Length: 264
Image 1 (cartoon, one colour):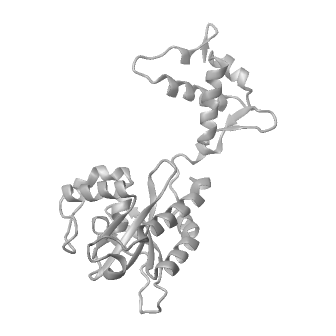
Image 2 (cartoon, one colour):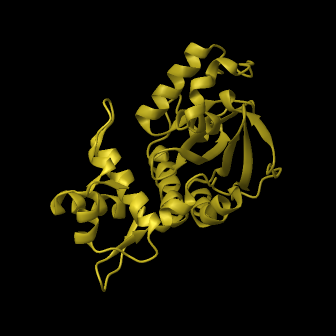
Image 3 (tube, helix red, strand yellow):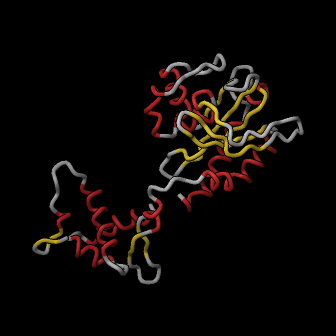
């Protein structure tokens, strides 16, 4: 990796970003040696000032790509690299969300649904019944069109697949269902701005829902949580959610996300 005593990473290619190039060099170096490396050796082998090398490895430690031995201060590749490319198991999301979903149903009196994105649909992976004892049907495993549900709106809004909105079949299920790519894009932009999405009717006439994303640490939605119930219990006559409802759903979704961070 060196020519004439100088690192090849010190020879910049026009158009490259030097900080990323240097971070990659650190990772390549740590991956090429069997033992943890002290900071001084990192700096020497990469032909970098020690302060620059320290800033790079500290940043890589913060994101989980590099580990520092607390006793020796030496650096090695971190466990975060091993999780790159791994999808989050829906069973893990469901298990981590259980307590928060149960509590949300108890506090709001509404049913709670948990979902992941499956192509143009959302798949319900958990369903907590309303606590009022009324007749209800378990919906786990059900597929619903993403464009016509609050769950789908937040999953699309917090996912790179939103760039493929023109590929969705925007069937109308209720007066408020987005039926053009433009209206759906606006709904997703509003969801991103608010941090949640609500939808009147959706695919279940007479109901309304409010959903929030369960996000990966880089902001990608790996799941979504929603409260669903009779329209007048979710939305006011103006169409706005009842006071405090959005905050409760967002808090439960964020709490679930925080329990996933050690696995994402």
